[in-house]
Image (cartoon, rainbow, N blue to C red; front, side, top):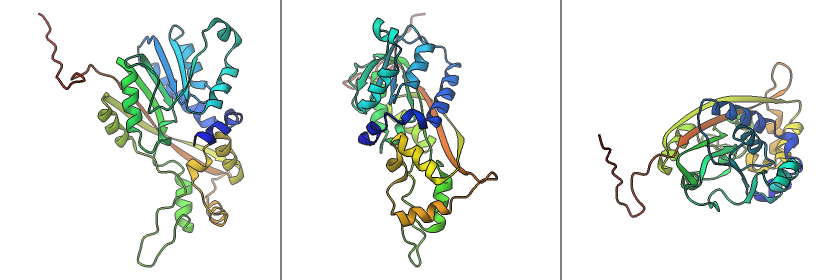
Length: 284
């Protein structure tokens, strides 16, 4: 996927409607949180909409923008106002993987991640790493895709048998058409396993509509996620599947995205690195 994301740096903004909408809704949730972080990080920053929003909200914080596709960081730098670059107030750019962050432990007050975690086969190592770099009392705020994403395409695939044969006496094999995503309960369990305290999870559906299948596929290609999201099918399967995509009342093709939101705090440690328990005494 790194190569696909890297190749999409020049076209990403033209198709990132969903990411911008989700980012705006994530930012609105921060209105309910009173924090004053000294360092903030956008993990999986793409071309930088998230880190720019965080800079406006927390102008005194040091901003970090991290992505594992280097051309995305080049695009972000080009979009950084010249005055910020000249004065050294622009975001610090880091080319790294979320599962191995080049950051010190307990160094961030706020970690933000918009529609990135679902591309990982197993998000738990990344969540553990995000827990490591957050300071005690620091906040993780993220959004990711949930299992009902593109349910219209899943239903169309099941209808035409795309993704696998229907053998006698067997149920139709699950279509390998749309990537499978974790639900919010599994993600909440992972947050607890990673060491976060009292995670709060919720979800909503956002539906985009497209005039033609070609417009939908072009958007996913411009975002650099077409193959990762949709898998690789033969053109005959794709033709049958897209032909079965149900139209809405306006004869457009609805594409539903389940958005899972989460935020969790890093609590005081319960034990030291050597396994000894931490016990605090408070004088009366």
